[in-house]
Image 1 (tube, rainbow, N blue to C red):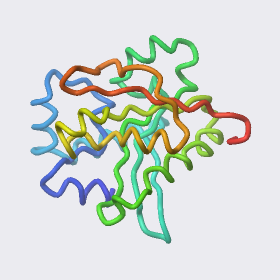
Image 2 (cartoon, rainbow, N blue to C red):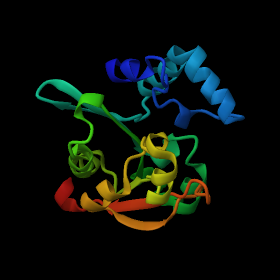
Image 3 (tube, one colour):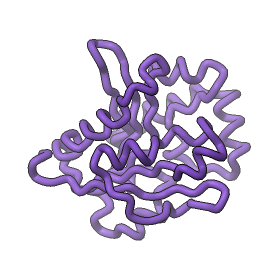
Amino acid sequence: ERLTREEANGKTGCYCAFWHQKWNSMEEWQRRQKEDPLKNRDIVRSRMHSGFHVGTLAYKEGELLAWISVSPLPEYYWTWRRTLRVGEQAPKVAGIACINIVPRWRGQGYQIHLLKQLKSYAGRKGWTMLEGYPFDEAAHKRHGDQVAWPGYPEAFLKAGFEKTEPHWLSSEEYPRSIYRFRVSETFA
C-alpha cells in the first residue's frame, strides 16, 4: 500500500484497479483516480481477499522495491480478448499488466531482475506462461513516461521473453506488443 499511496500522491491513485473493472471511458477512470483513489485500493484488496491473484511485491534489503500486477488472464477484466484467444490454457497464462518500481530504485536495471525472478515465481504458482505487454519503442519516443507502466520492451527481451505478436489493443498512436516466456520445469 505504501508504494501505491506514494505514487498516488496527486499523480495516479491507481492501485492497479483499472484491470479488474469495466470502464465506460478513460475519463471515468481518470476521475476515479483523482477523486476516489481509496476505492481503487479497496477493490484490489477485496479481490485479493476473495482469492484472486492481483500481484506481488518485491523487496530489496527489507525495503519495498516494486509492485508487479501479475495475474492469470481470466482474473483480469481487461484481458478477456486475450483469454478467449488463448483458450483453455488461459488460467495457466499469467499477464504482467504493470511494473511499478519505487522511484528511488528506477533506472538501475531492476526491471530486468524482477522479470527474471517472476519466472521462478510463475513456476511455483503453477503457471506455464508469462506474458508482458509493454508499449513499443515508437510509443515510448512519442509519449515518454506516460507509457512506462507496463515495462520496457528491452527489459523483457533481456529477461528472456520473446516478442510474439501485436497487443490486442495496439494502435498506430500507441503501438505495443506481447512478450512471452514459457515457464519450464526448471523454474518450478
